[in-house]
Image 1 (cartoon, helix red, strand yellow):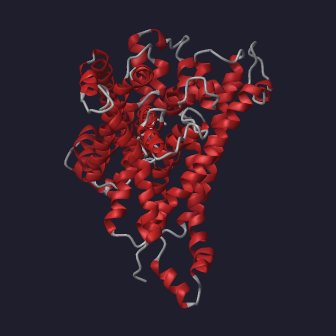
Image 2 (cartoon, helix red, strand yellow):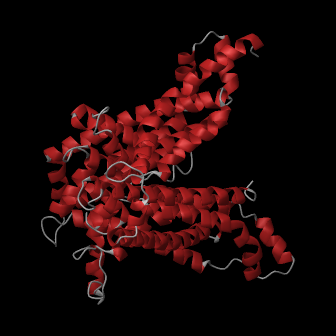
Image 3 (tube, rainbow over the protein chains, first blue to last red):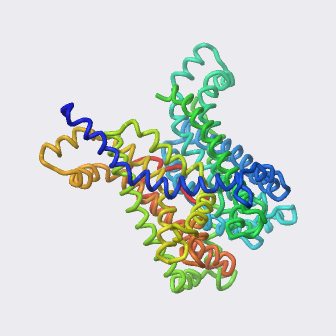
Length: 288
Length: 265
């Protein structure tokens, strides 16, 4: 061990080892984010105001946020539920082992297949001349005359689900692994029905992790930009696209309002991540 | 007990259809450039021969390699040092990696563009400056999972013993980090590297706002989407192949599920 005389000197130098990392964080994360936060509390003259946050309720901004929140909520819920069912089916649903490893490997790829190539894939498949559209038309189902539109909320949600569901599978799989076989045996021995096992044993154990992961999915699609830009258009009313147009100086007359739109997103993300880590701590109790 | 799990098969089948249909659709579309009734690889040859494809692809390729080097050099020594000497700082390092989730790419690039297009750091005006900013932005994207991979790797080895053994043999810090710790973390570092590679190759948001015109691969793909649908499908297949290869390598290295919130949505 080190001698006590050397400790004081060494202490002051040890900090140097982490300087590059924190300097990077300061320059390329904290200062850019703070710039937006400070700007959101200023008016055109640079004096303090809360007006920009009131401006978030103006029609353009409000509608963009509403649509972003709707799509995020929908894809988090749907992706979460279906993703959970898939993971559960593959892990604990009595299927052969290879299904499980196949699903997990494929989810690793699919959850990273997003952005521009994902948009191209959907256009080639569900666009007006896409393969699925044509096949369905041959089968007598004309999805476009039934009101389907790839370049709108429905199409965008379907595309988001392509990475949301695999993400759910990946994150929730350890929690399903943590459901011990003994718990089911024990509840059966005590005379519990299948429903009672789920209601009083499995679901309470899984719930924090399910909700937590869905919150992550929510944040994941709320911040998505590339997929929406490439699939729908650069003027679709989503919060992220509004921010993108604001960077180019296209839409909002007031630049400080633009900062507030961006800060609003950071606030929502921060709240999500806090709820997530709180739920995560609750989950860990059972998953040792 | 031993009945056929119909419901399980059904949901997995549904998943297979959902996830393979777009891939098959894209593949089919990419082969249809000449006529509807015959397949041809012309879309692929068109793309691969295109000067713009080669230019943007190599740009993103080099950017990916640079990002890997920067983020490994930034994260691994820091994580090692925090592990060994400054465990009190761990929550702060984790806070920084969390920041990259809390600040989505589009918001991050907003801040970067505004801060660095005015004095004292007018980096947006030179090619060197914008390239530098793009690498810094990409590094932010790769930070959380590079950190997580390295952190998991460090937990699995006895950092203190390795360090003291190297020290007692007379090694300096450079030797310890690069010749003792890094080799022991190679699986973790490689996982992080391949994921970074996959993410940067398809990245659109950050490069689109920092670089002027179509310089990187992501904006090139968007441009193809709007102008040449068959070639766009071919590029999507190529891009999926790259992702598949990268993740395949990571799975092969055996570190389970890689960084789950990575990516450019």
